[in-house]
Image 1 (cartoon, rainbow, N blue to C red):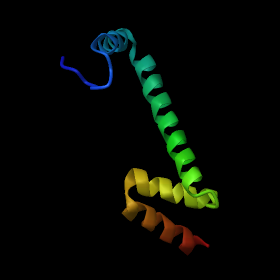
Image 2: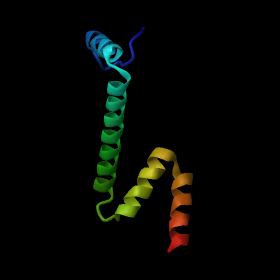
Image 3: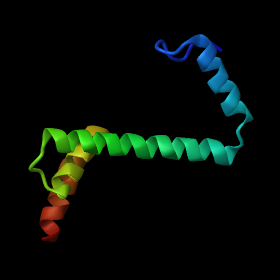
Image 4: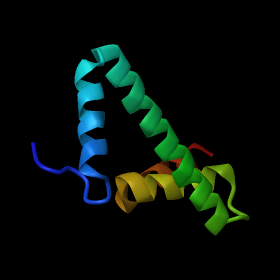
Length: 84
């Protein structure tokens, strides 16, 4: 297997790959879930810093636009407005 990350030492990368191969499916899933949760939290924190006066709803819509694209965010915004 070739290098996966240009900013990681090859020995560290190989050690990580070996750990992942030895881990069972439940452990690998838990790690992936944790990484996803952390990524979402950091993204939302970044949005709050850039938009300090935004409501939680607006933060959520900006998050949707960043992660899933502006078209989905606009559809959700329109649906929220329709429900009010």
